[in-house]
Image (cartoon, rainbow, N blue to C red):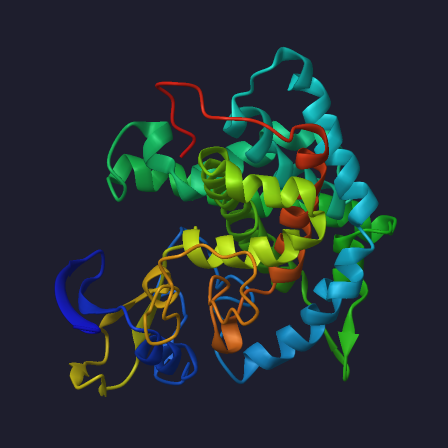
Amino acid sequence: SPVMEIDDLPSGKGVLLSRKAEIMEALRHPEIFSSSMDAVDLSNKRPMIPLQIDPPEHKKFRKLLDPIFAPRKMQAMDDEVSALVNNLIDRFIDKGEVDFAKEFSIPFPSEVFLTLLGLPLDELDTFLTMKDGIIRPDHVVGKMFGHPETKAYQKQIADSVYDYFNEVLDQREAKRQDDLLSHFLDAEVEGDRLTREDILDICFLFLIAGLDTVTATLDCMFSFLAQHPEHRRQLVESPDVIPNAIEELLRWETPVMGIARVAVADTELGGCPVHAGDQVMVMIGSANTDEDEFPDGDVVRFDRDVNPHIAFGGGIHRCLGSHLARLELRVALREWHKRIPDYEIEAGQTLV
């Protein structure tokens, strides 16, 4: 069934959506399927902006933020991002082997984010500690997600995130730089300015939404390419195919497999009743292989002309950082395959 009632979601009862038609209906109607803090609680004090803000306030924030992350702005970072990729590769290329996650996919997106914020790269460990403390506190504490000790640690880290960015913003208030935080301080649309709390809530979102997702995507893509040399050769021999390959691998792998919404009114989807207060699990990965949308969706084709995947979500909450993510993935695949055209997963090891 494309809509299935389930009783053991983290927040209680709810429904799971697996077909693109119902998924897009939910994503396009935030007035019914809300993205508020009730959908996902990560111990943040206030809603993460713009993810956990619904209309009409949401439009104001997107008008301020979308131009900052426009394709042209992201493309201008190509040289900086290329340097980061090559500096990482320099550290392991002569060894002939690499712990891909530890030495590449984990540090890379955090280094890009540090560069965007005008912060030194030696802040990397601080960022990784904050990110992991929010996203996977159970790994740090050693107890199940939701356990009181795990929740307490997550809240402690969440508080430290606000404190960290407050301190950096104090520095930018005193002296502007050519970086993202300075742009946030000066951004204005139709008389609207971001408050300090607004900026902190944006930074919180970027920390937990813009780092782990790119890491997971790189892990998925390189795992696939390591195991499919015929696809890998296409990237090596024809680098122009890389943008198309990224879209196809985003569709095929869909590293963020699902997202949560919460129903704020009684309704129905695909003939299934949905009640106010129900959590709605949107299975993006299922939509990206929906046979109604992709008749050959079980085949990875880098020459796919039309690729209406929703790896970055859909509707008004479509990923704000999608153009940045695409830049990071494009540069990573381009620079890596220039220097390391042949690679494989070591016997007995897994990449993801």
